[in-house]
Image 1 (cartoon, protein in one colour):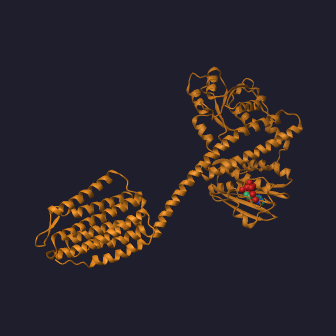
Image 2 (tube, helix red, strand yellow):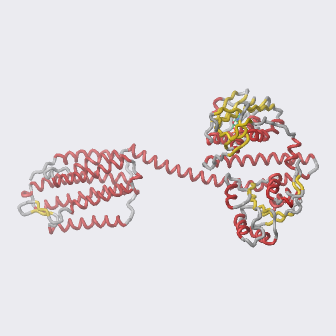
Image 3 (cartoon, rainbow, N blue to C red):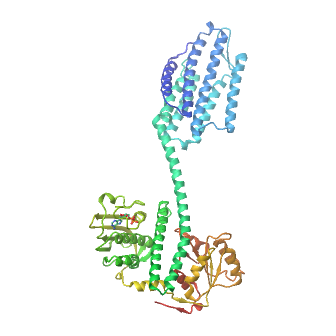
Length: 631
Ligand code: ADP
């Protein structure tokens, strides 16, 4: 029989072109196995054509030459499939891993080649009669099963890892598999005289080439992998940064606690006005340091998506008043005029994240005061009612300060960006305030607008949607009524006297114990101290306390373990004593975590006398409080 060889001859030329194209590229390992696939496919086509001749003219050709040609064909045909398999596995895993299938696959090829060798002498697969007739042996189909086995195995690997391929590559490669199988089936069944099984494979190869091997696509995959890697690394670095910042903030807070605590005692006890002035300078500097640490911690939490918006009901007047109190001193020191205006009829009680809105307003007011040397700072609170339940709260802070260059405005909200560094060198700042402000506004779904003119002043306008809890009009904003002396008095004078009260303070740093003890001196309380978790447990077994202040991080038994030992032991006279966490861990959400464990309340270091007194006022039993002084 004369075979039709046109298809496979054209396939050879076509594949040679593809091969030449690949030879010009610099190839990776997986691309090299693709090149081998093309090479074996060319060889398979060529041998298919050659055997078509030797079988057709078998009568004129010695049998052993025919056997050699056919055996070569039966060697190359599965090798094509094996290289396809190799290509798929390598492109998926980077190398052929030694899985159980690795050995099975090797065994299949070894057994096949042994069979081919045995066939030479036995004709179990095929042979030629002395008349030159091509005879199929009982194992003839093994020559097809083995390549199919590899093609199916590769298809299975592809399907199993379908997620790591793009949809295109999967479609192309599966089309390759289908074409290959279809070509073989058609040639074996319907078109017995036409050679096109390897023609189909040759047709399918460009599909793989365009689907997986074209340089653009490869570049895309490579870039995507690199991007993913870079993203992972950046995420890891960011997590490390956050852990570092949380630790740093914790470590710095501890000494600041001592500085501020001791300083507060000087302010309380010292009669010399000069020393009081020094102490006030220390207080200002320590507050500045604390606000920098808080800003750094805030920005890192915002960036890592840890900040949640927690809406509560709040009085708009209180919020504005509180924010003003924060800048009042500087307004006075700089002899600026301060005006606050509130739109009439603004609902009294709103619903939103008061803490964050306050933080935004304080940041804007602080900047307005900081960057204004003369003139005025004004605050406009207005609103636009959206429905019975919602309004758009607008806070506008205007100043007559140095202004911002137009080109700088878009950089304002980036972290650590400070404008006009030369002129502003003397003004302290980190460039974080507006970054935090901008991100908080965004987090609350609001918007912020800046208008500014150099030398004339700036205006920052924030709009945020808030709920309405009580639509009765807010009271007049009484801004700036207390004098400086009154402020100091409120801050330092102790308003509670309870000599019958017994308090235990637990901290592994002695000087911290001294600070709290000093701050509580005027209360007359009976104060016990423990320098470790273990000691605190022992002390609680011996004495009954009214309140326990417990540090968290302590070597050996930490504050939480000590808390559990105390509260879980029914025999302990203090198992129901209010225990208050007093820690340098100021990460947002820390309070909730401690309270979930069972702590009655939470204070973060540095702690002030006022905060301690407030806690005592809340948790000391009424019968031990002898006197509450209201100043
Ligand atoms: P910081 O004040 O700590 O430097 P901010 O993020 O609060 O950081 O502000 C970033 C920069 O924007 C400031 O350094 C300042 O140059 C400029 N800026 C902010 N508010 C004003 C303002 N009201 N008037 C003039 N410049 C301002």
